Image 1 (cartoon, rainbow over the protein chains, first blue to last red):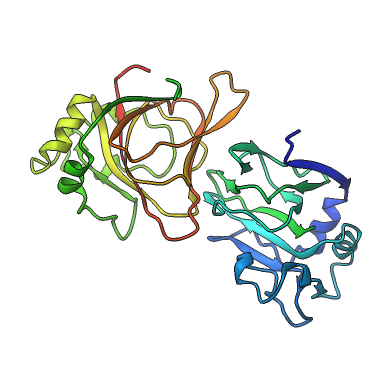
Image 2: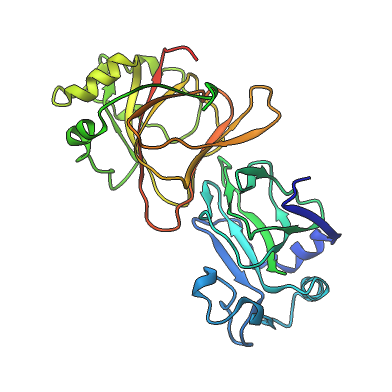
Length: 160
Length: 171
C-alpha cells in the first residue's frame, strides 16, 4: 500500500449509505458537498468549499449539524473527525491540484476503478470495502472521476 | 524523457503557429474542438469532433485540409502525417473518460501548465503513470492506444489548448 494511505478501521458502509438515501440522488453535473459539521448549529454549508474560504479554522468546524445520521456521527466521533462532509464528484470531473492543511479520513461509499487520487504523481484507488482510510492530503494531490457514464463518486471525508 | 508513451518528434515555431491560428476561439456550445481536416467528400469537419469516447476507426478518412488560410498549420499536418487534426480546449477541473484510441496521437501543446496531465497505463497493464508535456514548441507522439485519461486540475480558470491529430507515424 502507498505511503500516503493507511487503513485505520472498518465500518458498515451499507448502514451509512442507508442514512443518506434521501440526500444522494445520483444525478450531479458538478461537484457537491453536504456538510455534516459546521462552525455553529445553523451553519449548514460551513464545512463546504475551499479551505481558504472557510469562516474559521478547520479545527473549529466541529458542531454536529443534524440530529439524524446517528451511525455516521458515531464514526465521526470515534475517529475524532472535524469538518466532515459527504462529498460527491460526478463523472469526468476532478478537483484542483492542491495541498490540505491536515490529513483526511476518507470512507468510500460509491466508487470504482475509474475514481482515484493522484498524490505526488502516484495514482491511488480506494475501494468501497468498508475500510476507513487515512490519506496524507498534506502532499500535492487531486482526485479524479474518469468514468465515461453517469457515476457520482461518493465519499465521507473529514479532517483529522 | 523516455520514448514511451511520449516521444518528442520535432519542434515547430509556436509563435508563428499562434499568429496563424491563435485567434480561433472555443465554440460556445457543443464540442470544444475546431477541426482542420475533413473527409474528402464531406462539407466540413464537424463530424470529426468526438465526445462520445466510442472507439473511432474512421480517423484516417479525415485526410483533407479545410483551410487554405492556415498554410503553416497545414504544413505541420503534412509533415507529421496527421489526420483528423483539431484544436482542442479543456476547462479546469474537467477530465476525459478513461478510454483507448484506435491510433497514436500527435499533440502540440499551445497553452498548458503543470496542472494538466495524462494518466497512461503501462503496456503490461500493471501500472498507471502520470505524464505532462510543456508548451515548448515540441511535437509529441503519444501512445493513446493503451488505456488513458487526461485532466486539467487547475484551480482557477485555465483553458488548456492543444493541437491534436491521429498519425500514421509508428511508435
